[in-house]
Image (cartoon, rainbow, N blue to C red; front, side, top):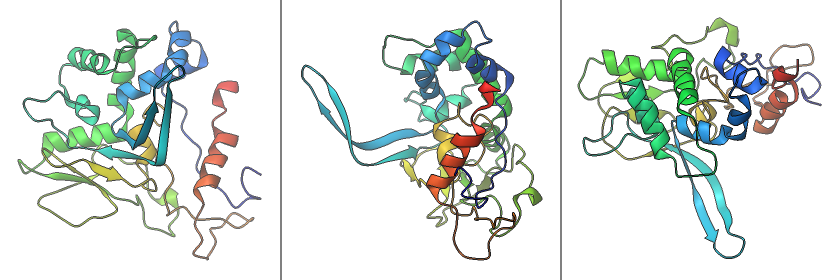
Length: 262
């Protein structure tokens, strides 16, 4: 059922890096706190914002409702001089202690507050292993122009090619640096500074990795239209049919997200 009789074949997910694995598996002293507060921790590190048409009903039982579609938006890399860094911009605060303090300060007060030592641990991990963060930092340090844009293509490799022909991206291969304006409707375009928020398509391969960095700490691709179906024998089908979004997540949840139980 999980692989649709062999039609769904996806590369295995990487096991999380050691700090995150220990926090989830219960072998870290802060595991109990982390698991109860994991949503707040992800919010501390998400690179995109949450968007929707929200309806809030006050009263005896306050209700939070969403009408229509949920979407994610992303801004520019560096904030204006008078603004506090938010979301992706937090990763470029050079002082890691100040970066951690800023992360904690942007969350509204709640019953469970993220701990500074855990924030520092996860922050160092993401700076080391996350391909998007490494790529963005590389662009800021090596861009040949004072004003530039970073483009994350919709597809990482050409369609109908075997994914193992293309190795995992190095720190400067996740995105391309361009100068000037270009019409890239379906790609993610990040300006170095200034500009409006840009909505990310839910079928872009980076949609999940940018919003849920603790679910995808390495920056692995999420669902996109370039994933082919396979024949029961294992070869990609020659038809134009691509893997459905539901089948993609069903496969991962049913088969590959059980590593803590092993």
